[in-house]
Image (cartoon, rainbow, N blue to C red; front, side, top):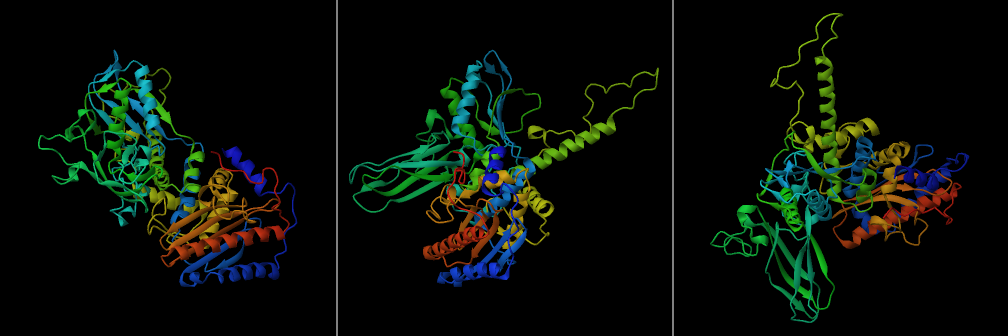
Length: 580
């Protein structure tokens, strides 16, 4: 992927031979400023908002346009550029997440507990767990006498990222919790199929099927006309009041529980669906979050094992894998350079928060290894003098040397925390990018809620640093959405001069619209830009004006590059869609 991205940068930015420096005349920069100001004036609703713009020529590292460029703005999902850059710089493009199954197998059985642990793979799927279950069965495993133990100690127990509590009642999948063992981005889908005619029955089901997810009967009706009006309520079964759908019967069982399980076997998420749907419409899918990542993954894995012929006698519980338990099977994610596309192109909040917390976990690992190496060096005995007897070894049962670890994956107990993760990201911004401490606010990895405050100048400073660093810069740029081609920009700037020549990250909240990235044409170094709009009226029209303004400025930047000798004429390789 790094090689692919480097090729992409060569095609888009650097000329085959040295070009004369563009004339930095007042007319050139003045015309750019005049064009942007005139464009902003065409959008009256922006007068009610705050707008900040910074544009930097990456050939000369000179800012060629700035308006309100030192003010602080909420970036919304534009924050993901920062998270992506920090993760790729600190972890490396080749970093992979790992999920393992461990246990002591003898004669086709685990006489004790089976363990599932992960370094927080954000892409772990039901298909991955099914593959692990199949591999275990192929090894001859048929029974586990103990529990399925989830080791999620790579992270601490706080699964809610910073600022997510600003919208505590939201059940949508975009604010899913983050655990070290996470399945299907800690979310599920409720699928709804309307009847063919008014009055026909409505079908509803969950994806995936899991003992943890319990869909209870609701009032769903098919109407002849009108829009879908769906209400989905998901609550832990123990939070459902007696007599409500999904509650526990008088005999202590939970009606409809798969495989005859009772609530004592583990918590459930009770999902009720009600509303009206229009007849004859296609299946609709609604994503919701799960509140208990370990239970969701564990119960689903037990069910998959049972389907493959491996029976687990016990329940799901959480603990750390003892050092003596052997590894049985494992799976790994795609490299980080590929996973970054989920941030830059799809704006996936869950993956962004996982990457942020991984910074803390891996920093703890580095510190632990450094400490262990230091302790080992200091504890190493000096070489005996010629003829002297060798030093006696430690007696059996002696305590471990200082620096010994007993947490998940050999880390100190406790797991990585959100404050540690935010500190690591801030350290990257200060040491690698050169931002002054306390001059910005970085609160979480996704940019959700009121978590970020950066100036346009700081954003183009980051983009310039990314562009100059060949270790991770090509992977960041390759992960950004391409105007009119893919990601969150696939429907923007279509059939305009900017199509295929803008790589950027969008950001959207109720009163926020941002666009930050690069404008590039053949034969010229790119321009880095940040176009940040905050305090918009909370209307669709205002948000659309902000996006139209950003798109028009992008077109102006492409025209500016062409005026300095670049070309946007279609050529083979000028636009390289992202890897599918």
